[in-house]
Amino acid sequence: GDSVTQMEGPVTLSEEAFLTINCTYTATGYPSLFWYVQYPGEGLQLLLKATKADDKGSNKGFEATYRKETTSFHLEKGSVQVSDSAVYFCALDSPTNAGKSTFGDGTTLTVKP
Amino acid sequence: GAVVSQHPSWVICKSGTSVKIECRSLDFQATTMFWYRQFPKQSLMLMATSNEGSKATYEQGVEKDKFLINHASLTLSTLTVTSAHPEDSSFYICSARWTSGSEQFFGPGTRLTVL
Image 1 (cartoon, each protein chain N blue to C red):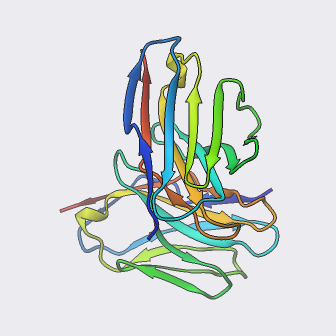
Image 2 (image 1 turned 135 degrees about the horizontal axis):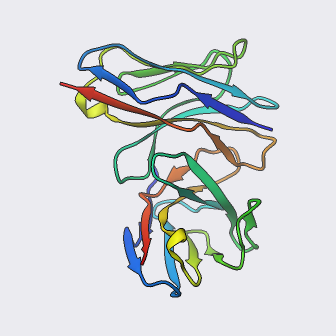
């Protein structure tokens, strides 16, 4: 079945540091890939997405590129801020999975001033 | 983007009582809604998929008689936790999509505490 594997956390960085959160996936067919962010006590918000190979999703300084050859969708940001502290989830939607999403376990990011 | 609301945002109830959580898509019609459960510091666990006008499809291990799901209209789905017990305490999140293949929009979640 489909699966998503995320880099284990927690991740602690200083403000303005470079961020990478690794995400790899296993899926049948051609899935769409997503990164969601969850702030404390809230639901998930879509951060960015990519629907086909080599697409780059970007939002709020975050980027991720859909790499079919390595089945990866790593999240990056060049300079993190304290306000980026949250839990980040990588997810995929597979057309063969009845419209259901598969989520990674989440990576907690803490950015210190 | 599209907005999904949940009500209540938090609820505390006594063991043995039932609790209803509403999920509404405010500015679009949702053909499919999903209900998730999230334990502290863990990922989302899909409980069931709800399609408007039909019975919900439950994931393996989720008791359909305990977690009653109704999707009566294209903008409203409800989750009722029947005879709640302390182990049902959790963060319940719904999401909605307007058509197959479109992205999901998540509600803000409902924190349930059963005493």
